[in-house]
Amino acid sequence: KGNVFDNDTDEEVDDPVSQSDIDSRPATSSRNAVNQALRKEQEVLRKRAQSAMAEADAATYDYDAVYDSLHPSFTTKANMDAPANNKKSRYIQDLLQTAQVRAQERDIIKERQIAKEQAAEEEANIEFRGKDKFVT
Image 1 (cartoon, helix red, strand yellow):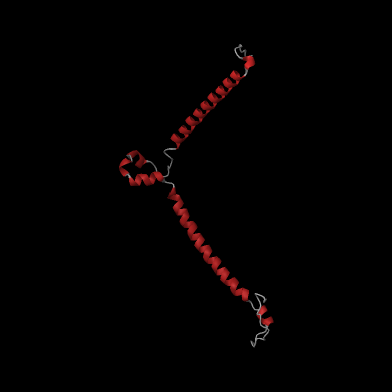
Image 2 (cartoon, one colour):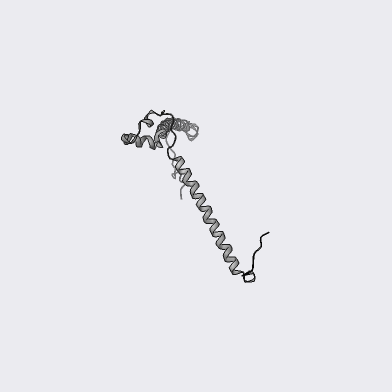
């Protein structure tokens, strides 16, 4: 089997350049130059993409403004007179209140489950069934 990287023939090459000259040539310098040019080009493209994303991100989550632009009849004069920099969410208070109500409901359900478990334990314990309980 021959080597993948070397020539398999034993013939001498009639090229005037010797093997030592080929090894000492700056072949990597042209490769490095191409790599640097590609890096610069990619950096420019990356910066353009980042700036485009930054511009797009500013308006990505501004659902209220988009909705108001689509349905101007629903906007009130009070909303139009409000300053543009006051971009406060209209719905966060409702979401927070709903979350609080749900947390209270979960607590009530948990307390009921605990009470049922305690009642089941008391019924299962034959030794104390029908006797008075005294809490101290």
